[in-house]
Image 1: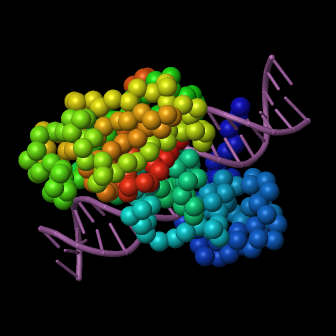
Image 2: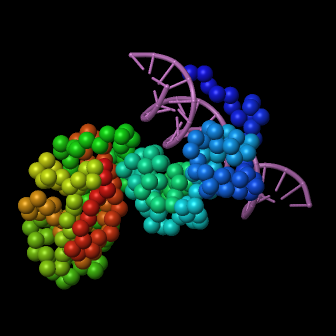
Amino acid sequence: MVRAPCCEKMGLKKGPWTPEEDQILISYIQSNGHGNWRALPKLAGLLRCGKSCRLRWTNYLRPDIKRGNFTREEEDSIIQLHEMLGNRWSAIAARLPGRTDNEIKNVWHTHLKKRLKDYQPPHNSKRQSKNNNDSKAPSTCQITLKSSNNFSNIQEDGPGPNSPQLSSSEMSTVTADSLAATICVTNDGDQMDSYENFIPEIDESFWTDDLSTATNSNFDMTGEELQLQFPQQSVEMDVGVKLEDDMDFWYNVFIKSGDLLELPEF
DNA sequence: AATGCTAGCAACCGCCATGCA
DNA sequence: ATGCATGGCGGTTGCTAGCAT
């Protein structure tokens, strides 16, 4: 295919948009819609290429765009979604109302990458993002947890700050004060029929050596639910879902007793 | 005050996917 | 089935403001 000549060669303007150009574009789209982007600049009376108009509109002028700094919640969402989706900025933007892919991409490169540099993943395997579009259900998957809480506020029947790592049987003695959360693993928005295909297990290599910052969890398969119990009423933790094809996703979550923890699609 | 450096961000470029004739 | 036009996306560039020297 023969490439269309670039804007400059056609005598079209490049570079930053002026308020006047913005106003022309806004007025035109408000009264006519954008229709054919390539035809728009000529119809609107702009010396810009259609691509430039579309970009200006979608990234800056659209009325539903939320301007201003990203909140901590939004930044956390971006980090989680990036874990899940990789550099698919438009897919990430679709989950953050009012934010554009370009904006998210910029925030990622200027702020969040630095933030993540200081944050080491709770395991020593390399973090990988699934960067293709297929979302086949995994035939097997492994769920790994690491709590960020320490033991300092545990009830008296719980372990102390220097307690050794709990065994599953010890955990069962503290259920009265424990957190019981349910993990719901979804694929394409649909709950899995059952967890029979999942192999929940604690991978010992993921625990840190410092027992004040690492706690244990046990898995209790009751029916089709995967229950997690902790000796706390609430817990902040990293939930890792490891698929058999060596893809893994990590989510930092804060859950309280009784919460349903639904992992994003992967 | 002048200069250099850096971070942040808007905009551009090139490629790819899709729809249509 | 093929080729073209268009839209959309991700990577990259380059301008600008703010800060340090």
